[in-house]
Each structure stands twice: as structure tokens, then as C-alpha cells.
Amino acid sequence: MKDCPASEFGCACNRCAVDRDDDLEALKQFNHASYSLAISLIFLAAVLGVLAAGFWNANRVQELVAHERKD
Image (cartoon, rainbow, N blue to C red; front, side, top):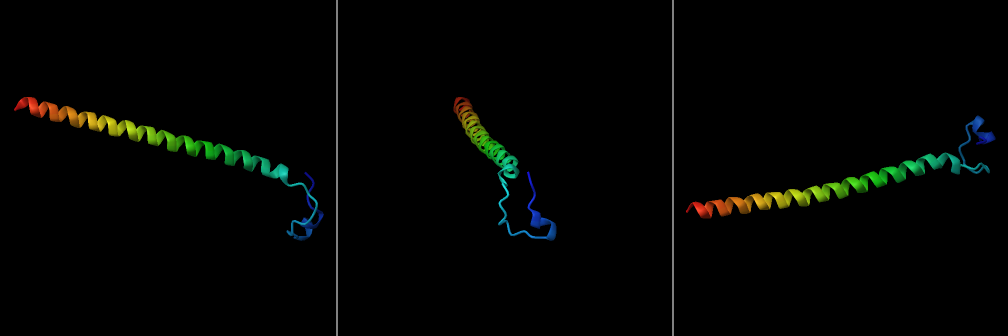
């Protein structure tokens, strides 16, 4: 990609006709990958939370049944 000729003199106005889409492609890919990973981790945490709640509830029911049989 060709640099802006005025950038050598400290210009950062971004008014030059320089195609900057190539520079942003890696950032777009990173954003897509990090978003996908975040959604996957949230989904995994939700599934594990539901499983943990179910196991805890099953354990509690088992304790109540054992307590009732003791009496």
C-alpha cells in the first residue's frame, strides 16, 4: 500500500486518496474471531451453569429422599 506523501511531514489529516481498507482487513478478521470466541464462551458458561444447577438439584433431591427413608 502506498503511503500518503504528506505523512513524511507529519500530516495526519486523512484527506489523501490512499486506500486504507487493506490495513483494516486484519483488524476486521481479529474482531470477527474475538466476537465469535466471546459468544462461544458465553454459550459454554450458560450450558455449564444449567448443568451445574441440575446436578445440584439432583443431589439435593437425593439427600431429601435419603433423609425421608431414614425416618
